[in-house]
Length: 300
Figure 1 (cartoon, rainbow, N blue to C red):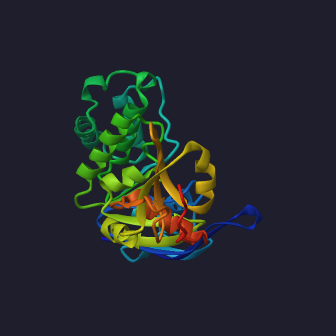
Figure 2 (cartoon, rainbow, N blue to C red):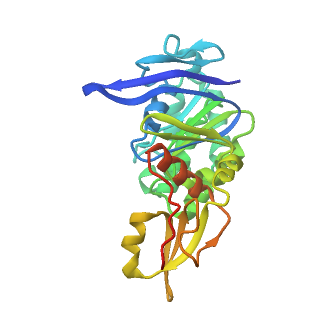
Figure 3 (cartoon, helix red, strand yellow):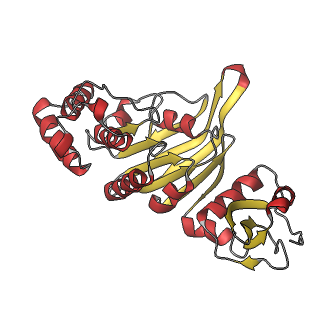
C-alpha cells in the first residue's frame, strides 16, 4: 500500500507555483508534512485528496492515476481539512449520520460505525448535544470521526491542532498515533512539536519544493554538534540575532538564554547541547532559503 507522487507541479493564476517538481513515496505510518505557512502543504493535501489536479506530474494510488480515476482513492480516503466546519444545530450523531449518507455508506452499518467512532474519540457522553456547544478540541475529534467513517486506508489531516489548547493538542496527537496501524496518515502542520510527537517519517517542504524526506533520527543527526546555548543581555539580543540563527529564547534573571544553530560556538561561553527536531527544521529551512549557518564567535 503506497502513494507515489511523481514530479508534481501546481500553478495558480498569475503564474504562481504552489508546488514545483515534487516527488514523494508514502507508505504505512504517520508522515509529518512540515513547513512554513505558504510552503505548499495545503496544495499538496488538496491534490492528494483529489480536490484539485496537478498542472503536471502524477499521483498514483496502487498504480492508478488519481487525476484520471479519483474514485479509486476516494473510496478509501479520509480527509480532515484545515477549515473543517460543523452544523452547530446538529448533534454529533446527526452530523455523522449526515456525513455517512454523503459518503454513500449503508445506513445500518453506518450507525454501528458511528457509535464505535464516538467511543474512539471519547465523545459518547456528549453525542446528543448540539455541536455549537462543543469546544475546539471536541469539534476536531468530531472531524477525525467523520474522516474515519469509511475506515480509510489513506487519512489526511491538515493543520489539525491549530487553535487547540495544549491538552487538546496532546489528545489529538495521541489519537493519531493510535490510528496509525495499517494505514497511511499524513499530518500536515507548521507546528514542529506535533510532528515530533507523532510522525514516523518527516517531509520538509518550502516554497513548493521538497527540502528533505527522512526519519526524525536522521534529521537530528544533521545538526548534531551544531546546537548551542548561551546567555546574552537584552540590549545585545537584536545585534546577536543579526549574526546567528536562533531557534528559541528564554528570559531569566541573568539575561536571555539563547539557543543557536551554528557550525561553531557563537560565543566563548556557549555550551553545546543535544539537538531537538525544531533545531533541525530551522537548519534545513534556512539552508533551503540560502541562509548561511554562522561560524562566527561573538563576545557576549
